[in-house]
Image (tube, rainbow, N blue to C red; front, side):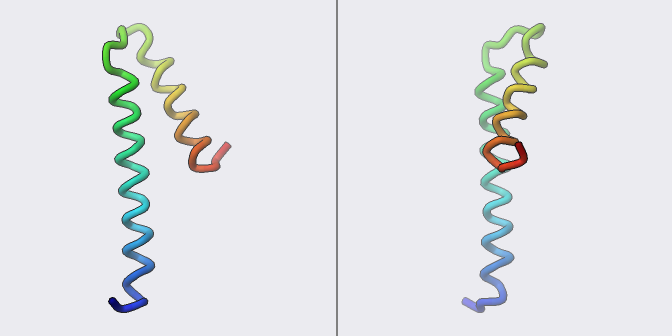
Length: 56
């Protein structure tokens, strides 16, 4: 494979993996969660995703 195409492919693949992981974590966190607790759960999931990505 052409080395010029490897880096964009790696970057795009990693972004897709991170996005899919965040969506799955949010989905599993909201499963069987009462509506009054959903905002707190989503805030906690956002904090976890930020910590994993190194933004915190």
